[in-house]
Image 1 (spheres, rainbow, N blue to C red):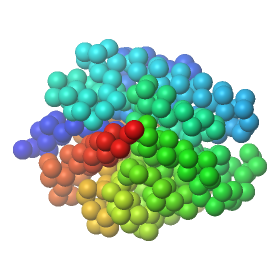
Image 2: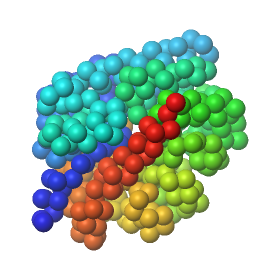
Image 3: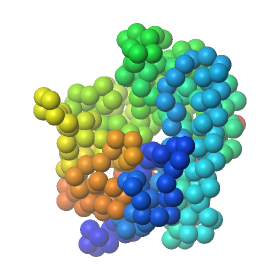
Image 4: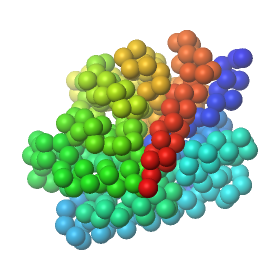
Length: 335
């Protein structure tokens, strides 16, 4: 098969795509965002997890309530992007595979920043009922669940607050396990990430990260963390954020390409095996590299990986097979 044919036959799932809020452009039209349905169709991106993102704010009842309201409004909006025909909303692994088999575009959702939970341990069940498949425990800035890999001094953050997970954070992971939602440790400081690997009954995932061995950025994960993911059957999704992939020259912005992404994939695969590595873009949240600037260029990343010697099976695992395995495990462990 040609690279084009292999790409076309692959269930390509991008596990982390941000959306503009509260006034999102029409995703049915070719527009200003890096991801919309026409770009997905041109690039052969078959499935997208759109993110209900909540920035870190004041940690009081009012702040938590506003964050929860925003996240749930975004989840409902993301679900409305599917029409049930050309675009199907998928909340389970089986639904996603059936959507792909039918030739439709798949719409999925997730929540970014456990700040939206506040102290409400019923939130994961509500979010799962709305279709969300994972929660990113933190964003930039500590919250009441865990320490962030990037504290925000402007919010009063010390370098560390909980020494990893808080007691509430451990309870939140248990609630996510009960709800059948995956635990996303992107943005979480290393101690909390390692603790989450120990605490979670289902395998954890870093949905948008990179390898610190190749680029020492606080949002990446080091080899010890990669080993921890392998030990629990988890997954590191290499993402298209230039600063995570290649250090910027002094005084300049970072730039990177699909070849840099492939370098990080190679490192992670060599360290922990193909079954524990995946792909994501973080489009419209900072992602975009030469060769994969938007969803219309998705085939460029597949081509770069095929050139490295990955075959059709390996490409399928990287794009969706590994994530589907984790999602099925989370579903099976739900109560």
